[in-house]
Length: 417
Image (cartoon, rainbow, N blue to C red; front, side, top):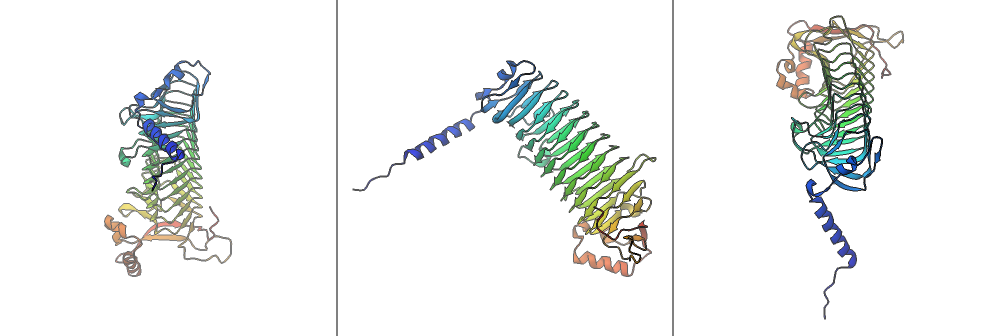
């Protein structure tokens, strides 16, 4: 007689647990236990550690308390509004899993909306929210070691991972941002943005009308654009790694009508354009300093929108770029100051062995460059077809070439960066 095998108790238990997990995951935020009563019962200075579990948002914090999830608490916004509203000074929100905000750009539906000063938001995991952390008229806050990603929708419809609006003296440190839209700083000054990693977005970092910020030791890669400055003077941008900005804009670092900036010790690699300069510096009595950067393996290393002046390029390393410097509109970049840069296409000698070329590095533009006159031809940059055309126009140009730049003391060693 054949017997029908019965499932073991072990597999029965697994099936029951799986069913329970499915039921819990299908609960709406209204059916979850709200976290707000824990907050309402707290007094100023209290540390709130809820039992591990999934709780319903929103959460409104209007006292200087500490909410610590101990990495076991999830707050689900239920797809409406922001998940946490931080409307106080001196509070701390940490070690939480924050999910499922609303979808309103007008209301800036976020994981955490900050409307106070001297708060700390750290070590949280933020997923499936429209905006991540939004600071509005907020000062002296610390945003640290958070992992942030947006809703899984088209990139232009996502919110910003971190957004500063009219916010000053904040520290944005060691956050990991993936698959969001932008990291934006608007009308905000004297902030420190350090040690963050941003990938899979549109703008790694975008400034508008924001002065005197520091951007250092960040890792920006596989975004449409690296760092872009618009009307934002006095910034210090140093020691950042910016790679693979190959979108429609495709710029590693770009600046428009921006003055008194220092771009130093950065690596700008594998971008469509390494640096893009548009009417900068805007203040005629100011300069922009680009020093000791590695600008390598880009389509264009430095692109000027027009014939402009006031930029200083000192001791940078230009290596492996298809084109070193381009000026749109047939202008020249020679009104800027080029000194002591390394150029991998320098055709000179160092007979006295002092590390400096015996003759200047000179770069010329030829009037009949097809890829400059026909923008769509840029798609074929680096191809055999355009390289042959470029060779022929250099061999027998139709008109005398224009001097784009002259570096009087080109460096022959690659040790500048």
